[in-house]
Image (cartoon, rainbow, N blue to C red; front, side, top):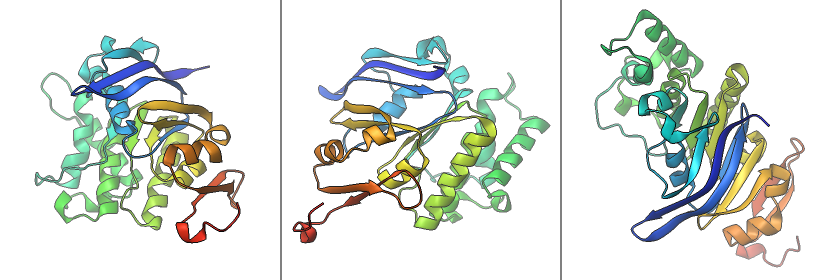
Length: 267
């Protein structure tokens, strides 16, 4: 197998609380890999470890076969890009200024952008359909526009791996699909590996190749979605009743939470 990411026996503690316990999984080059699980499962912490923002107390992270400690911060940023869940808009940057920041890991010693850097930034903005917003400030954007700008910045890094932390949170269905279709197209066009944390099990099922299910910082199951999206496993992990059947759009799972008012319905 052509693993671009190897996560082995990761332990993370914060203020004497165990956040991640012996988490192990691998991601193949070019695949769309989902990390799912209830709140507090440790999903975002896991992404931060992969991108080098926090350091695990035990375990190893290998990127392209090399321990993450082999890479300088700059060199790792040339390979891995993160689209965070929380997007800061405190500074009055324009869309163009924000996107070109993605070139920072590639700049020379003087830190000056070249003509090629600006061309890459323009292409990223056109790919994410935000080029017409280039001069607009971040505070003037809608939620969907802002999310596409942050993705454009990540694409501008020209990473081999892009990490997405809840990229569709607080977006309406049309914008959710636009973001997901955008990432799938980027994966197919560029061969980029996509690792996404998501609470939306149905979006994860429609776009992902394989997935990892976490609960309380532990790996419940990792593998193909037909193995992970198992009713018994999901109900035990999320603590609620679920209906898991086949999505009429294709041979992928469809997950429906069952409210208390329908507790009498046999599933």
